[in-house]
Image 1 (cartoon, rainbow, N blue to C red):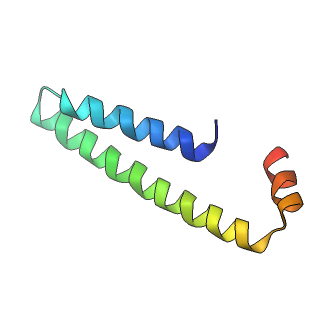
Image 2: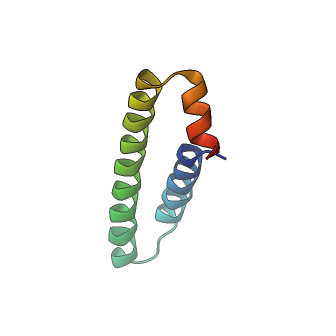
Length: 66
């Protein structure tokens, strides 16, 4: 599983937990966590875009395997 896929799964899980949150405090906490995960996903997508344009396919594969 890629890091991006793991983040997207984590985001989905947190959204589901937010939907069933029982207290206002829990809802607020989960909203913060969701915002943080969304920022991390945006950063990961930006990183992937930079890496993909700056590296050859072989260099990218080698970096991912290492």
